[in-house]
Structure formats: C-alpha cells, structure tokens
Image (cartoon, rainbow, N blue to C red; front, side):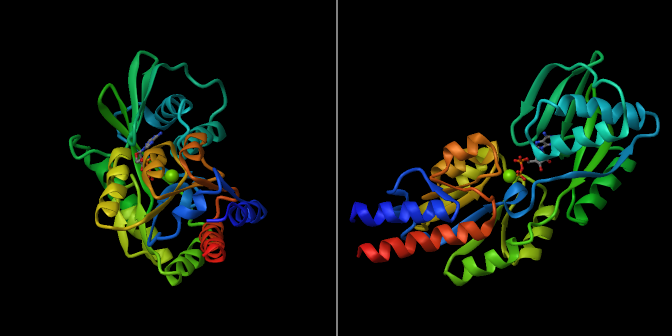
Length: 291
Ligand code: ADP
Ligand code: MG
C-alpha cells in the first residue's frame, strides 16, 4: 500500500468531515460487509424530550418526582438524563435538590440520595412489579416507539417518565445507500424492543438487537466477526465504546461523547449517517487506487 495514496485519502477525508485516527484506518474498511448502528444519537437525533409523565396516586406527586429525578440525572451524560433535567428546569423554578452518593448504573439508569431517600431512575425491569397505572403507561409508551423510565423512591416505583426523540432526516436515505453498497445494516440498542423496532421500520432496517448492555453490544460485534463478517459499527455513547473498539471499523459520531470518539477509528464530525457513507466510499476508492 502506498503511503501517499493513504495520505491523500486522509486529507480528502478531512474535507468531507471524516477524521481518521491514522491513514491505516482506510485499510480496515476493505472487507466491511456489515454496518452495526447504535439507535439513540446515531440513527436518531439523541435530542430527547419529556413527552409525558404518570405518577402513582398515593406517591410524592409530579413535582417532587420530576425534580428528584432531575437532581439525580444532572450527573448523567445520557440523552434521557438531559431530557429530564431540561423538563424539570422548564416546569419548576428554584434550586435543584442536592444529591449525594450519585451512581450511574451502566446501560440502565442512575441513582442517588435526595432528601434522605434513595432515588433511582432506570429502565423498567421484569424483576420489579409495577402498579397497574405505571405498567399501562410503560406499555403505551413502548408501543408508540418511545422510551419509558421508572422513578423509584426507596425501591418503590412512584412515576413513569416517557421520553423520545426523532429519527435524523438523513438516516433512512443513508441506510438505503449503505445497503446499495453491499452492507447489511443492524440496529443495536440498549433501549426496549418496541422503540427499537419502531425506529428500524422507519429507516428500513430488518435486523434488530435490543435491550442489550454495553457488554452485550461488544459481544454482538464479536459474534458477527466469529461468523466471518467484517464489521463497521457507528455509535456515540459511553455505552458504545467497547463495541466501537472491537469493530473492524469503529465510527464515532462527532456529536457524541469523548469516550466514543477515543474508542473509534474515525470520527464523522457532523454525526450524520451520510458522512458514514462518505467514509466507506472514500476508503474503498483510496484502496482501489493503491491496487
Ligand atoms: P442506547 O443503546 O439506546 O443508547 P443505553 O445502553 O445507553 O441505550 O441505555 C439503555 C437503556 O437504559 C435506555 O434505553 C434507558 O431505558 C436506560 N437508561 C440508560 N441511561 C439512563 C439514564 N441516565 N436515566 C434513565 N434511564 C437510563
Ligand atoms: Mg447512543
């Protein structure tokens, strides 16, 4: 491989908003036949907003539930956390309650102590039975493609917060193009199956792997590789970092977290899937010149 061609490719990449870790990155795309796409923040905008909330009748009420949830989420970088913090800030004036013992529950949610109570905001779990009013809200949210999280006080579920975002304008067309280039797209997400399938349908992806932990995201890439595939993975979150590092070509969204950018082989500045198309085309073209 001539270093010159790779350097030219690197320069052309920069013009397209595709930043390569090193020129050799272009070589790893040669055989890529599968493109694994994270959902939130990659296929969708990741700009989530609070759509609705439901509280239990004999609980703390909306204001206290939302403000406590926001207090705990203020320590989170997740789009769900940002949506909850923003909604509480819009609705209620005054200082955010103090949080101690903050902890992030990887791929699941956050927790902390607020006003002497253990407040947890996390995805619904089959291990925790919900009162009817809350389970109905979760089911309704998920069937419409939204994401529901549970707020609990001292292990007691007291509210459901429903958040959602939109598919990026460019995602469906870019995925059609990736497919035309011979790549099989797979949607990979920690989010619930209902929301994942809703998004997959709207952008023309047939294969969905949902409700996975960050470690299972990594394992999904390894499995595809063990089956003989050469895998590109595009993602933006802390939860994608291990999978991005394992992929034959790790593509970080420039709009995402630093951890994802460090783990990727290349970064698409715009965070747009068209730039992913450009990156793979560029690599193929550069390598064609070399041969
Ligand atoms: P994704 O692959 O969609 O980016 P994650 O692995 O980050 O998903 O999270 C998986 C699920 O865990 C989310 O869909 C959400 O239900 C829950 N979750 C993650 N982080 C948070 C948080 N900060 N607050 C509430 N729920 C969260
Ligand atoms: Mg993401």
